[in-house]
Length: 592
Image 1 (cartoon, helix red, strand yellow):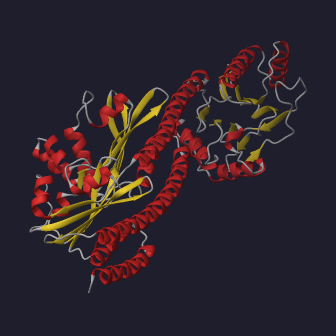
Image 2 (cartoon, rainbow, N blue to C red):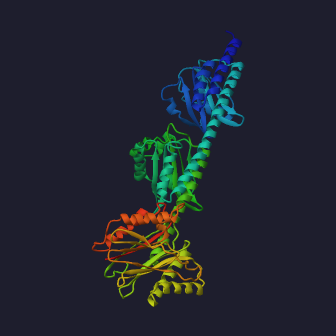
Image 3 (cartoon, rainbow, N blue to C red):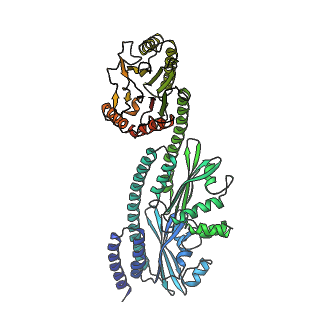
């Protein structure tokens, strides 16, 4: 067969292989087709493909005909190392080496992975200005490669490059879509809860194994980075990772690793981790063993930054079968870290505000309720699941003649303004009770105070005086949910007479309600957070409360108020909206 016939046959085989490449859907499949089928078409007995990890590193993705162990030895290698493949990429031209002598002369330190006299051709893989890697063909013995053969090899490398670009661009598009979807899912998780430790654990689980084989999130606490979330595709290696951190952390002053990123606020990307470099950098054999057990082949660490503050770091690691992180992955990681940092900062601010709100609320709430002979008292206050102070208040005052004044109110709105108005209103009521505790007198005086001082907050209030001498309770309601009387026999009565006008809405006469209150009866006042729920009529909540009171166990024979307090707290837990959108204040007086 002459040269022309041989080339014609090869181009025919190339056309058939090209049809296979059209159907390939991964780099590995393209590599296998190029190494096996195209090499056969070219008449090569040894072939390999290396792809660029970054501008300075090549990764061997496939080979045939080489000695055992070459895939590990040449897993990655620098582009600028003295190799025919590196030279082909750097100079963007075909490199031809004729025989073992020329190979040794031009590349004296090269271990080609094959023995004997051979001719080598390295074909740069590129499309336009996009460099992809290099395809290497090796032929036994010395041989002159004709211009026609070189032309065939050039066409062959172009065919491989086109297939590679197609699968890479398809994979990149799918990866971008996956990253967008991941960021959307992570954003939902980050906004779903203000418990950032739980949230970060969810984010770490989302990232493994889709984006990385290992993810660790560490936050600064008391000057040290503490790992709060860790996930590994192999659960058994989670403990190995934690052990490495515990035993071999470089510490706050370390010049490498997470502390370097934390102090500098700058990300670190290692697209390809070189095992030889790792071994040279780690002198401790036990540490080296553990690090190798984690199978770290590519990694990046990014700061959790909010404005000019770094809260911690996130580390992603890929193993042998995972991705090789690049600058696009780093940008994605930094985007996710920014979202996580904002969520952490918001959660921390929420916790501080919630603590301040709780302190403010406790400061203006009564301490221990008075112990009045013949009566047992209990109160319950639960703050909503948000950071702002509320306007709910209550109090119980002994009047000195056997009677007791009790009130429960709610200033509309939230925040410091509502809390301040609540404190002023509660103090005003306590002062007015000392002057004249009669319900009508107290509410009339409050109307005057609101008008005189231009107090524009709207306040709902139930004010009552229980009188054991008359076996009754006298109640005035200023736009507040009706209180409940639970009888000794377990029946429940809602004191739902016509409510009067709210405080702050202008003075008005409010009807007075008088009902019996006998030994064994209990009077319960509460704020609307106990019975109101979104998209539900308040009457449904009031009936839920009444039913809970009817089901409640009889506590009348209790030797102290402890059981009454437990009863009240359990009642609130059973009736309150699980969403906890509003504060709840409740107070109960039980006539012994």
